[in-house]
Every structure is written in C-alpha cells, then in structure tokens.
Length: 386
Ligand code: NDP
Image (cartoon, rainbow, N blue to C red; front, side, top):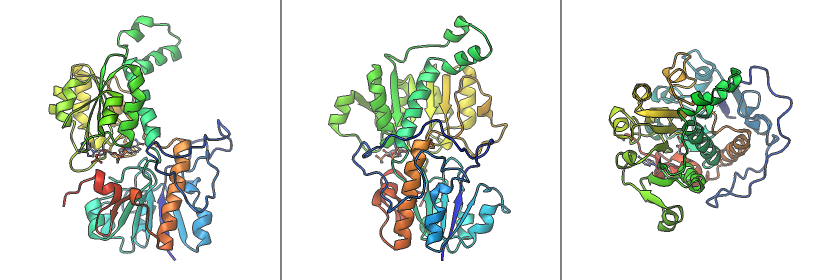
C-alpha cells in the first residue's frame, strides 16, 4: 500500500471554520475553452468548505484510507528534520500546493526512491525540480485550469487597486481621516492606458478578456500567437518578446510559468525600459522578477506600483523587503486558493489520484512531466535546463 504525503498550509489562527460566509458555490459547467471540470468518480467534501489547510486534507482521507493507503498531512515542510523530509523517504505520492510549496529539489527527489507522482493541487509545478523528476521517472501533474480564472480576477483587482490608489485611500478611512487630496494625488483612471500581459495562456487571456470593456489598449506577448479572430475581437497588439512589449505599456501583468526562459526576466534593465510610472502586477512567480530591482524601481518612481501574491521563498520571511516597500499591494499567495478554486483543485487532485492508483492514464492536460520527458501542458508551456 502506498504512502501519500500531503503538504498543506496551516489552519486559520482562530481554528478550522465551523461556519462560512456563503452557503453554496455557483455551479460551473465547463472552463472557458471547453475543457471539462475535474471528473473524479466521487468526492468526500462539501464544495465551499476550507479544503486547502491541514484540517481540510483536500477531502482525501476517506478515499485513500478506503483503498488501504496511508495519508500523511502536514504543514511542516522546511529543513531536514521536518515532517515532510521524514516521510518523503518512503512516499509514493507527494501532494503540495503552490501557496505552501513543498520544494521538491533534486536532493530531495534523490532521497525518495519510491516517489512516483508529484501532484500539484493547483497550477504551477516550478516547486518541483523538473529536470530531476525527468531523470528519476517521477510523473509531475497539476490541475490545469482549476484556478486560472480565480487568478485572473485577482489580477484585475490588483491593477485597478494600484492605478486608483485604493489601498492607501482605504487606510485613511480606517485612520478616521477624510484626506481627499492625500488619496487622489496618486490616483488615475485605467481608461485609455496601454495594458500588456506576458503570456496569454489560460490566465493571461482571461485577464485580457476581462479588461477589454475598460476601454484600454491591450498588448500581449507569448511563445504561440493567439488566433487572428481573438486578436481582432479584443483589439490586441502582439509583440514577439517581453522586451519589445514592455516599453509600450502603462501596466504589465505577468502570467507565464517560471521556467528557465522566464526566470529573472524583469531585472534592472527591463524595468528601466518601461514607461516611467508604469505598474507591474505579478501573480505568476516571484523569481520572474528581480526582488531588489523592483524595490529600487518603486523607490525611484520608475514603477508607480507593484502588486502580486507570489514571493520567494514561501512563506516569505517577516523581513522580506516586499512587505515594506512603497506603493505596493501585495497579498500572501492566495489568488488561486479561493474557496471556489479549492473545490475544483481538490476534485482534480482526487481525479489524478484515481488515475494513478487504477493505472489509467492521467488526462494529458494535467501532465507536466511523464515517462521521462515534458508532457501534456508541460510540453507546451514549460522548458527545462536539459
Ligand atoms: P497556461 O499554461 O495556460 O499559460 C501559460 C502561458 O505562458 C502559455 O501560453 C505559454 O505559452 C506562456 N509562456 C511560457 N513561457 C513563456 C515565455 N518565455 N514568454 C511568454 N509566454 C510564455 O497557464 P495558466 O495561465 O493557467 O497559469 C500561468 C502561470 O500562472 C502558472 O504557471 C503559475 O506559475 C501561475 N499561477 C499562479 C497562481 C496563483 O495563485 N498566484 C495560480 C495559478 C497559476 P505557450 O503555451 O503558448 O508556449
């Protein structure tokens, strides 16, 4: 019987919820591109409940123990003495969420001879060393599309909140003030601005679609160009590279995976080529930007604002400079872990486990690495060092 090691974020500080703000979730039929939502044989959780924290267990215990497997759930993931490291030695499956990633480095993969499946309950498998997974025959899968729209909504929220100076204005209310001038001295309309996305995959395209009604000029760059009818419908300007696109934008949103091509893309040089006072929103991965270059650009005014929910490492240390840099609207890594998204990625995790344990193929769109090479979505959207 298999050991399934599941690394999840901690329960709320006030304890696991017994009531919720809303009673139900809207029922979705399909994802926007027609892909079906997760189709597990069954689920043992109530959609809308907190599934991504330790007590939520992604709703997997009954199913896995019913098959005679062992489920270990922990949030303790750092250091050689962590519960994660202790159980990794004989684990067959590791499940982790990008919000609280169990970093599966080459060293850790080498110490896990039984490991067959690294499963991301979410999207973005950069916390797994894909080259090492390829070498060791470990399958890497994620729940493609499960939270892409959740993130797109967060991106739109962050763009508006930066451009309109929402968070500092809200602070004046909390402080008892009525300081109109303080609030509006950095407040603009989005209307008429040039907004560009680095990558127009599931999230990037959803952001473009959501922003089109704001009467902005939309730009994008991607490795594969969108169909001409989509470009025409949304009035998109295509740029062959991020370097070509960035100088034409007032707002740039990053929606590409972290892989060798994108790591460190927004360094000092690219930031200096952006329009003075541009806004940068990064909900993709922190290492796509240079941490300290972003701080300097905000301090000098080269960037008027930076927001996002992705940090490195995660959780971010309490002295991480992005907590205190000016003109930022950072959140912890939450955009893809709304209760709505959790219901989908818990179901998708179950679907992938059902395929794994029954020996049937995992859906191609869920695969990042399989049979010793990039596969499925991984073959389309990722690159490796080898
Ligand atoms: P998709 O696979 O649908 O889209 C990724 C897109 O990135 C693809 O269109 C791909 O191009 C493009 N791309 C890859 N490399 C480059 C590059 N060098 N330059 C330009 N474009 C590139 O994934 P999603 O849209 O669903 O998610 C994107 C990323 O967002 C995830 O990988 C993850 O890192 C992050 N994410 C963050 C979440 C959060 O909670 N903050 C939650 C979910 C995802 P092509 O395929 O055409 O080659």
